[in-house]
Image (cartoon, rainbow, N blue to C red; front, side, top):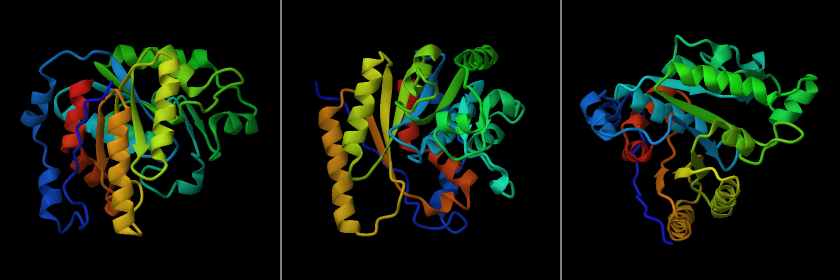
Length: 283
């Protein structure tokens, strides 16, 4: 069955947020507008923002969606069950890890240990990073942490770890953790050549695990080096996913170089975008 698709983009992010009036307007906190998206009850007590790969934009989408929900008055919790690459090498940064960025932005009063129960220093897959430390990632510990957060908040956003088939123990993968949490997913995918296969395989894996998928969000993670060819690749990727997905496909979110230097402003702009508004409607 052909999917119903909404294809939206952000305002142009090609200029600095310090000089762009478009960016300044997008960063406005329009609580009334955001609240209008929530004139109904949530289908689930939360959702997992997973991805087709690592570094596809899961943290960015989680942060923007969470900020939009908070602006709408939702009592929001955040969780990153397992995080790797948290070594002190990045300690000079304001928030050296993804979980800390999310916690400081969305739930600053929550403890870091609750938001991210397992924080592993090596930038490896979770199972490999845990083995290097002689640790076992206990699913029961993650269950307990999830239930504690779930009981404290109206809605809980959980950021996943890599892709859904990444192993977290000798027997369990990320998709098994999602099943244990009994939450649906939002799948973040690169808006680039190759992502059709990655996206459809991820959706097939989640379907096999009986995990509901609310939407796919396409994200442009790199600037165009050959704009004419890459724009054609992006457009054709969107079109083919429209034809072959039976769930909403939102985006693509355009590449914004200033997110690296102005992460907070970038997230604030993204939180008011049509893509995030569409995501809220399917929660």
